[in-house]
Image (tube, rainbow over all chains, first blue to last red):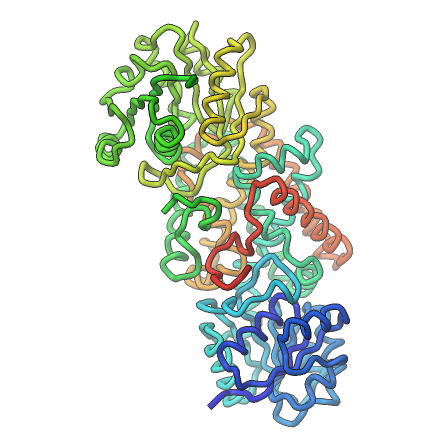
Length: 305
Length: 305
């Protein structure tokens, strides 16, 4: 039996539109209602045939759904929750895909009393945005972390888990504060650093922007991919996971200063020892199926293995 | 006419073995002598048929060559130069592929007086190492920066430029100190930061290493690729481009602290403004043919555009 019969997706960007495509592929009989705040996006979603019904407002979209998934920036959750509160059917599960879970759980819990709020986070994405950027396989082999609030209905949690598994994801349960600390490491700090280094590189006087672009294959270009991610989504992530990010940033800066000192004093042993240690982590990530082993992520090299 | 008739490659790792393959493909009549300090690598090079002659010592390899390319870590240049000094034919060009140019020019200039020393740096590579990791197309569409010392022979510089162009590279001339400042931005700092963040992530107490690996698709995994690069090569880069790297690191830390402050004070505008600005740089890198536009570098997503 399918875990849900009609899913409402609010927000049809990269993740929302990937969800719609993945549902169509994995559970073709499930009905999809979609809404996006942008009229342009709604028109494009209709054109692409991503939903059975494209609603002009969020309330209409959720009315007959038994699962609602909010795919909007974390900072927009409160407003969307207020929009749909009066229109939710009893026993509807309200979930989301935000990169921060503690603040989202609090916001949705407050705005939707008595509703089955079960926040979730599929750890997947690309640097692209908008309904054209989505694709059905985005969640395949990736982890979806569900963070059930205290006293969440176990049956509903299992239905939501089954839903994600059918889309190809692997599911983990975690409490929200721990999720936020884990993602600060595996996602938020990497994005912050990528944004920061790309900013630094654009602002130099001695090295021109054109030189930075021409010689970016030396490593810099990798950072620019992450730093091309959606600005509003990421602004909201940092504003809503402030404590975990700031704590980790302190650790990172400390470690970076230690490296700086090793370079200044010519401590080759310290450098080589760190650089050797970091290879093992990549190996494990590949072994766990979380990245490709092709050189350079497989880009641009038709005759490499 | 071919720019050189017999090329000696000293060091048959990723770059040296890619060079051998690229020469075979682009200039099949050019003879290739190869040497590597490791007997195991030499045996593998012979097995793969990458060279016409695999010499047991560097001196023998360079004897009848009109171009010698040193593909060893920057810190090994002095020893190799001493090894070959007595065996170089008159008018042989000695070049290299190191990521740092000022210190290499100094070391080679001192060790090889009267020799045509013309350092170069193809800005290309992957995270893999060793003779099996090389491939012929590595330099295609990438830039090779040649840093001719003052009073370098213009004809020899042009022959070396032509050699790299025939391998598919685009050639730029630059003075060595400027090269080192440019590469500090586009390559050295990105590597240092990647090594550092991977180190930080491995040393946390609250978040386990297994969690870091499982959820690495949130962005972290991108950094692990760069941080899997050759440890000795990179140790030498930082020891030999100390000033430029330290200066840039100072700038980077300053910018990162400003971001930290924006997060602490909830300055969403500052965050969004930086995150929007950084998108343009990626666009330019793609337009200049220095990276793929496929989402996620094209990895893992058979049904994405």
